Length: 130
Image (cartoon, rainbow, N blue to C red):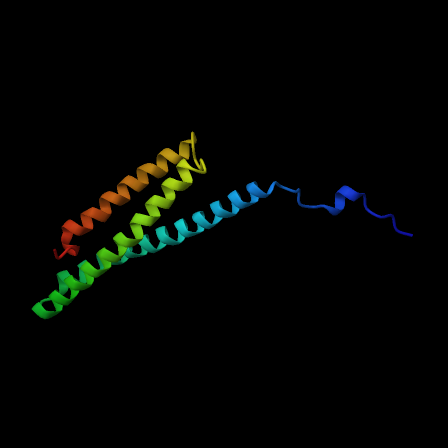
C-alpha cells in the first residue's frame, strides 16, 4: 500500500500574482528580441569587413561599384538592427533593472560603446555611399 504525497508536494511551481507573471513574460519577450537583434547586428559587423577585403582585391570598376553598393546596403540594414537592439537593451536596464549596480554591466556598457564606435568606423571606411 502506497502513501499519498503531502498536498504541498503536488504543487511543484509556486503560485505567483498575475501581474508578476505578465511582467516576467514581457521581460522575456523583450530580452529575446534584444538577443536576436544584437546577434543579427553583429553578423553584419563581422561580414562587412569581408566586403572590404573583396573591394581591396577587386580591380574592375563595375565590380568595385557593386561591392560599395553592397557595403552601403549592409551598413544601412545593420543600422536598422542596431537602433532597436540598443533601445531594448536600455529598456531591460532601466525598466526591468537588469544589471543595475553590478560590475558586469560596466564592462558590457564599455563593449557597447566600443561596438558603436566600430559600427561608425565601418561607415568612414567606405560603407556609406551618401
